[in-house]
Image: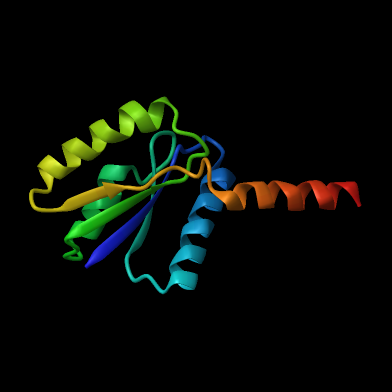
Length: 121
């Protein structure tokens, strides 16, 4: 079984973190995924370790981390690989994969176009 984790930066503004959780819930519902967690790098809970642990107790054997970041910045280049390596060692036998960030996805340009069009009407 595979679990998914939507992984965001985290904010001291609770509404921002709730928005990420709503995206996770929508992805779970639309995709029909059984095991979906939300995790944050900092300033919010749960962190990635807690989200992985929550999935591990559900007997998943693979976790896919989906970075909810626009670009491949320092957190995704340095921090996330370190955290994933530590978690893979802690949860021996659990495969943890990380997808690309949102940057470069064609839907982003479409979203911006929709926002611009709405603003200009």
